[in-house]
Amino acid sequence: MVSDTRPLREILADRKRAIERYVPADVQAVHDRAVAELKARRLAAHALGVGAQSPSFELLDHKGTTVSSGDLLAKGRLVLLFIRGRWCPFCVAQMEAMSAIAGRIADAGASMVGISPQTEKQAFFMHNQHELAFPLLVDTHHLLARQFGLVYRVPEEQQALYSRTFVNLPFVNGDGSWELPIPAAFVIDRDGRVIFGAVEEDYRVRAEPGDILAAVENG
Image 1: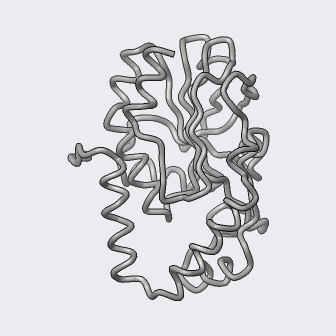
Image 2 (image 1 turned 180 degrees about the vertical axis):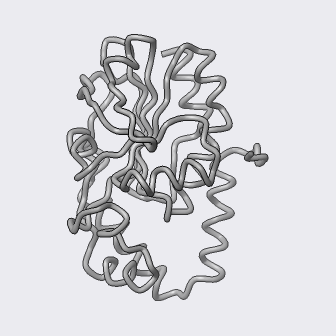
Image 3 (image 1 turned 120 degrees about the vertical axis):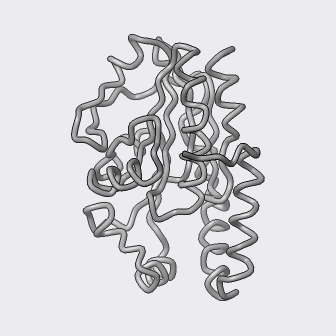
């Protein structure tokens, strides 16, 4: 089980510092350019915002079970966490931090799911390895993330870098699109309305679990 109880921003800062120390500068520059391009496109600003109606969905989870937004919202509020995949250390840190407060989310009468484009097998591996306390849903071909306005195509120089470092997205995601979602966290009210949204082009920045919990509890 995860024992690091620091704020997520501190955990992510540690991971970023480790990358800055051990990853060659030219490799870091590729990722920095990709993030800068997304920010220039203002992709986060065009994502689904607070007050919008959330799309409904039926997706398979990491065990192959169909999960319906309608069924989850019938029980209470719903937390949606869009991530890139198990290969991303920042996604892993976020999922572990959210898993640590999963009990408090449930105590507030809400459900929580992670959502990624990775295959069911990859989602299972991630869930099992990190002992997550909530389901990971499989968003094949980014059908749901696209409705939230989160999807982008990985730049070619970053594709080449990922391929050299064994981040084989066509294999991990089961398609050749080389698309990913930008990280995002949403809280959906029982009527399907978005009451909290945190969308970030920089994959090294994530919503604080405490802010998400506060939205669940207070709206």
